[in-house]
Image (cartoon, rainbow, N blue to C red; front, side, top):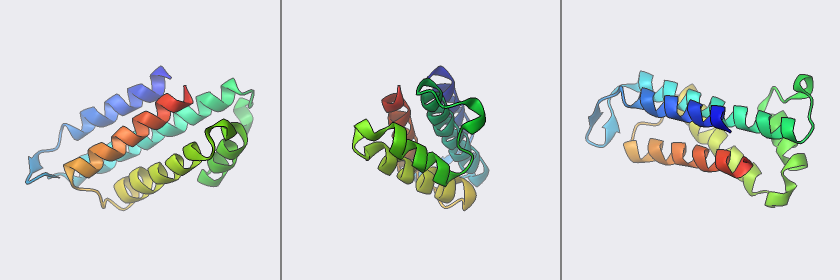
Length: 124
């Protein structure tokens, strides 16, 4: 899981480029980029997990619904916790952080990145 963690490190590096004012990131561009990079790291971790489970490269998920379906099928030993965590990551990092640019507070963004890191480590 080195590559997904490298994505997270890149996301943190990108966040570091934004100034912080009153507990908020001052530059939305860096926050959006960091959230997108971190989310891609999560997807890369799931891909690697699925490859270890015998899923072929050509049949890896391409849509969020397919990722959810794959987690239900191949990560059942986690009692749905990974699926719920993935849902949170999708909503927080991809939708709120990257797509809509709604994340600004330093503590919220850092918590979302921590959640992504914990998710990646659980897949290992």
